[in-house]
Image (cartoon, rainbow, N blue to C red; front, side):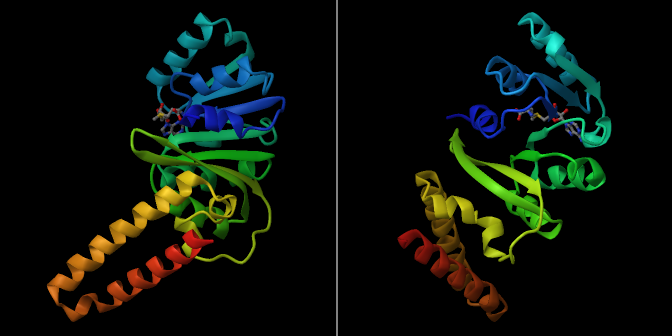
Length: 225
Ligand SMILES: C[S@@+](CC[C@H](N)C(=O)[O-])C[C@H]1O[C@@H](n2cnc3c(N)ncnc32)[C@H](O)[C@@H]1O
């Protein structure tokens, strides 16, 4: 499954989906073609991408099922207007900022489908600290990059554990092969860092080395299960 298919597969059947940062409108196209929803509010901050979405969705006769809006994040939505909100293809911090700026809209949405291109850990941290519960998560790999797709809902969260910001608890519990691969890669990266820091023979790095050794120990334990 590719990144966009994975995003689509995580949206529950509903009436209205808002695709924030729609660009070409490919996600909107997939949702409508598969009848996941009846209407898509396709939004973008920039005129160029939004025009591309209008052009593309018009060319495949789906524009009448779309409502196109120019503007930032969730500010272009009214409370409760969309059943699901997709924010995909942006950095984890930008996604967090978009939610934070319009929390009233986010908490009146049944589900948020979030796909950070970078810093998924920062997004998970934001969700944990702001009472959004992660219900499900998937991992896909494209061009040697691992991407996470997160389904979150407003709600009380369990006691958090910083380790799981970086390594999704849900994906570990699902025993996803790609997650195993991702953890193995992190393990190797950490080992290289440890080796380089040890070569420096500088006591300033001792705490960092110890933290990385402990992290790797935990990764190995979880990979064994
Ligand atoms: C890399 S594209 C991702 C397109 C598509 N969502 C995907 O996942 O493939 C990012 C899009 O987000 C838009 N964007 C960036 N910041 C935004 C914001 N604050 N609100 C809405 N759209 C934004 C950009 O203009 C761009 O079209």
